Image (cartoon, helix red, strand yellow):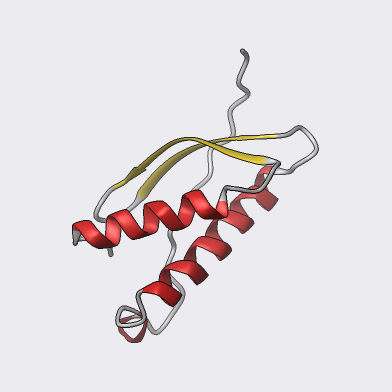
Length: 91
């Protein structure tokens, strides 16, 4: 999906923009050609599923808005984040 460097930079910026909400803080982000690694800090009142929904939905909408040529290639939704691992973090 993100084979070109400009597409990787764009999806990185879109994910960071999606994570600009007060209850979501992106700690690390690594965009690979086929997938994305993202470590996110969320408040205790925010569910991991909600944070994932926000990151996936907003980043996909921003990516396709800014890169419309890519949209016709995909007849079904793209999985930017196909999996979720929730680990507690202690400061």
